[in-house]
Length: 110
Image (cartoon, rainbow, N blue to C red; front, side, top):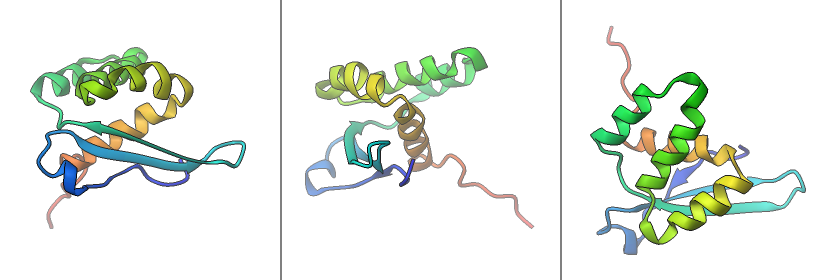
């Protein structure tokens, strides 16, 4: 990914449980691509599902979990278009969502 996936808060998203996450990058044809989907915070159920996924099934599991967390109005587009055409976005969106929830933010103390 040329640029890290970031969530952008807008006035309309501040009151919603679905927050925008945008991925911007240049594709192999050197065209700029910008894709935004709205996701909710993962719950315990999603976190348990991810932790139980075997290495061989992690990618498929991440795709399914993203499908559960995306705004219902965008679910079909995410699963049938975005993730089919740009499969690396599974990892990018998942990583950005987990970071927004505190994943990777804890460091060992001195």
